[in-house]
Image 1: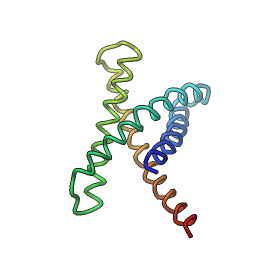
Image 2: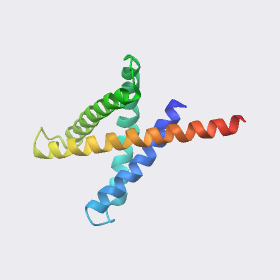
Image 3: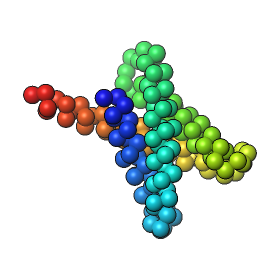
Image 4: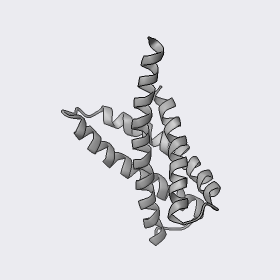
Length: 134
């Protein structure tokens, strides 16, 4: 169920992210383009990094859920920066510049969106599984 929740989170996150970018730019003209690129990034980069982050989080012993949450925020923010800047440099063959800083910010927003959508998806799937098992 772990991979399923990440796949669902990738789909929902890419839709929300694309709508958000379209609203910020005051036009829905580029929604499909945003969706195409963000879906690819969320599906490949987001799901793979999420699995790595979850594996790393399991290595820690947390006394409270809030401490796990804050470390998740840090891990996913770092992952958003790494994945987004790496793909930006790979796709556009440009070095590190001002646009890379914008990509870092978008990466953080996208990664934290993915994290929170994944939390909601996990909760919804757990409720659904409990109802089906009765």
